[in-house]
Image 1: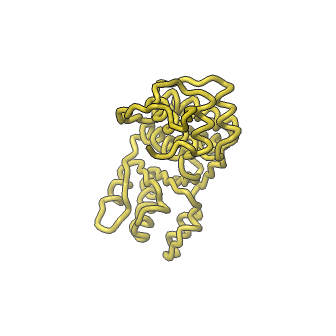
Image 2 (image 1 turned 90 degrees about the vertical axis):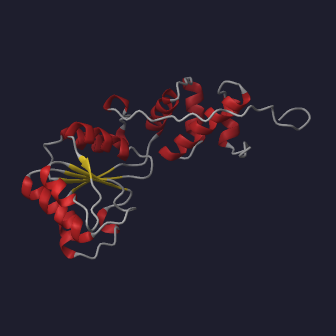
Image 3 (image 1 turned 90 degrees about the horizontal axis):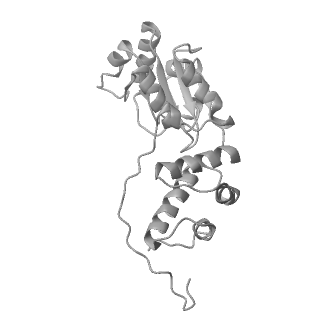
Length: 229
């Protein structure tokens, strides 16, 4: 705020689209993500043909799924009635993302898993919750999912959040120093989605004010005093 109680003059920033880098070299691997990263890297030598990656929003599931899809040439499926998901699963590796947030046909997913098992292919499923919480009523599907390898991604620690901040800023061609990163991490919510929101708001606010990203600007964003204007 200025001495007269007004906000600093702001320019309307152009809306740039910042695509997250999703290659293997762009993955931030720290303790909470290490087991999931290891199972993806281990393919095709999986302990079971079906692997379920479980973790909160922004935990790295989609990044790992993207890496695995590139490595395995997997095709994305939606196991719903009338789809060709079973035929696709019989031909090669398949990926089904956000299983606990997308409608799917239980019988179709059961047949997809059978096709994967029968033809020696692989199925990677991502979800925010473990399969037992999906309210599945088909006993045969419950049995198949119990036989899957479930790998849980834990909540991010400070080391991982710091590395994620560096990556998110780098995706926007921005750099921050260690002190500013430590300041943000020590005061932010412990989640990947929070890190994404903070970086986006800092970038937009800095552009609007024509300034660099400073500790004062970070404090403003962390205290949620910027508003929407």
